[in-house]
Image 1: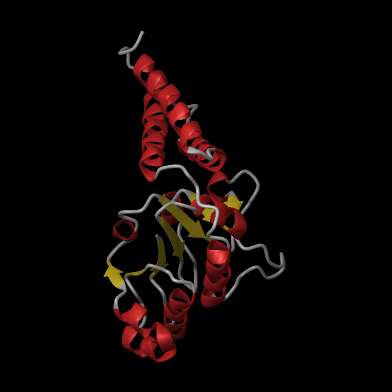
Image 2: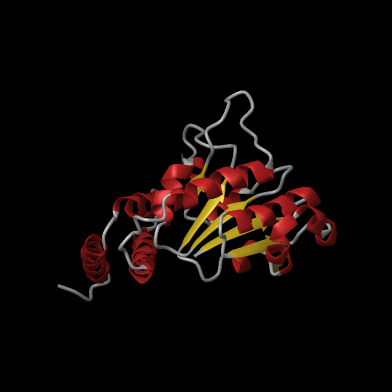
Length: 226
């Protein structure tokens, strides 16, 4: 399942074009967070994506738009700044690999300022389209088209990792982080651990083996398991 999330879009034409792209690439759901444009006017640009636009879920905040998915990916033209873990990115073709077999939401920000750091932190990965270093900012609908193309380019090799297993892994990573949290361990440690594990686990057997190890570590730290 693939969900496109637009956060506070400002241009009617972009919203209409994105709805059309959702139809082009068989996107299952379109969510629009607190739109800053007239959706009725946006319908003029939707062409055969009008049904997608009319059935879009309009929500108040990003948290609501991300409910019910396994994998959350933000997008930004500002990425890979030295020392900024939050903005360490993956390219669209890696995002495609990560999304296989998972209920995935891909989040696009405002045309003017993109996504905030808080919004990026609410997701699992940051996706960045490699473009000119002098001018890396793409039009919203153009960026959507490139990423959707990569996500749908190869749907034959589906990951065999169950989404429930991934959710449990994420929970244990978070629980372990909370348990050892101190002045020397910050939120970046959890973020990096989650990204590394989600990228590396390819099969259900691998995921369950890692899950058993993390469960034992968690129980040991809490004095439950000897």
